[in-house]
Length: 213
Image 1 (cartoon, one colour):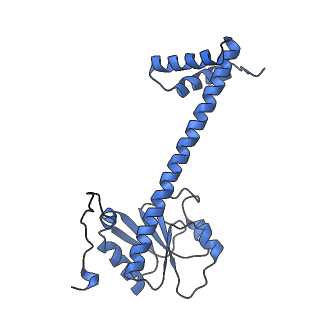
Image 2 (tube, rainbow, N blue to C red; image 1 turned 180 degrees about the vertical axis):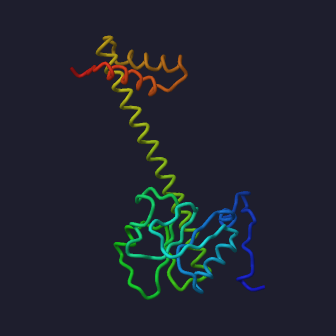
Image 3 (cartoon, rainbow, N blue to C red; image 1 turned 135 degrees about the vertical axis):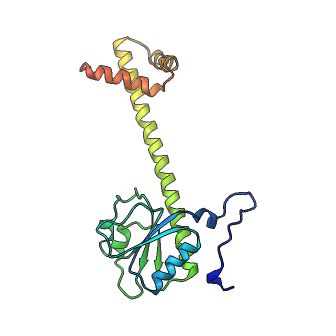
C-alpha cells in the first residue's frame, strides 16, 4: 500500500485526547483555486483527512466564509475579497502561493493568512499548512476572547465607579458604603454588581443628572 492510499491514523494519544489528525476529521474546507493536477492533489489530501471539501472557481468577489478552513489562490487584491476585517477572521485562511508569479509582500500581509501553501505541493506541505492554520486560528480566537473579557471587565469596573460616585453625591454615602450598597442590591436581586451599577447610572442619566456638577 503506497503513502497516498494510506488513511491517516485516528488513534488517540497517551492521555486519551484526540490526535491532531483526528481533530481534522469532519471539519469543512473550501478550496478557492482552479482545478489542475496540484489542486486535485490538495483536494484528495484534505479528503484523506476525512474533511468535507468543496472547490470554488473563478475567484468570487467575496471569499466563502462558511468553512472551518479556506484555501485560497493568491491574488494581489485578496484582502479586499475577504468577508471579514483583519483580526476578526471567521475561518482559518491558507493562501496558495504561485510557483512563478511575483508575490507582493504587502498584499500577502494585508490578507493576514494563518498559513501559506507554496506550489508545487507535497503531502507534508499540505498537512503542515493545515495544522498550522488551525493552530494559529485557534490561538487568535482564544486571544480575542480574552481581550473581549478584559474589555467587559474594564467597562464593568468603570460603571461601578460611576454608580458609586452617584450614590456618594446623592446620598452622601462614603465610598465603602456606596460599594456595599451596590453589592447588597446585587445579591438580593441575584444579578451582577455591574448590572446594578448600570441600572443606577442609566436611571440618573435618564433624569439628566450629572454627578460632577
